[in-house]
Image 1 (tube, one colour):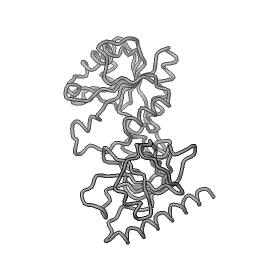
Image 2: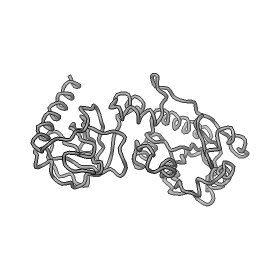
Image 3: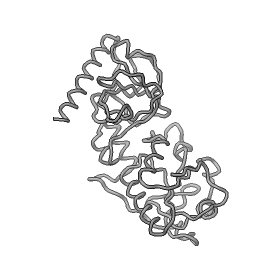
Length: 307
């Protein structure tokens, strides 16, 4: 997959295009990307995605924007796996936010991207003050065709990034997995930490989080990237209130039956089952006893799941 950070001044070839933030790349997004690739094959055009970074809600309201479900790299990896040939990452800034719907279509879709076929969701909004919708796009689509994608329903839920966030915040990992079509995961490189876990007898792989995560607590997890098969473990995701005040969120993973130097290794941590919420303890001895309990419960969960 070719990745373009920014849009060219003029398109070099026509494309089939879909547009969106695609946070989570949930089952609704997957259906959309599947339809994109199907139409692109019929039209003999490369299937392409136009997405935005930062998320528009992060630009307009950075302190109240919802947490991201995926890092940009994870999102791009999923695009590639789903057959996307080209991804254009447009920086969402004041200039882009000020474009009228007509200017967005003429400048970005026609001149810069040469979109011949465009797929958008039925609730898609674009342009200044979100004034554009699918009807507006069709009215201005002199050189390309527009198709609308219906909502995908999973059980009783509309597949949406909001529904995934709600499930994760409630600790309902099974519902989140159903909406995503895979376990929720956080990927990143293992970084050096304060080595406190090792002192307590539970050395952890630490993954720093650039943004606020959509869930918190103590979890049974699977870790990919440490060999040919995933490894099980227990993870703490949160601000570690027993250790320090006003700390940034951190993901700490104790991998069962594993003792290798993995600093700098890129891993993916899948959240399988929530054990409990994060708590503050009076001293490290109490925290250590609770970690022992968490480890035992996570081991029992995986042993039961395999039975």
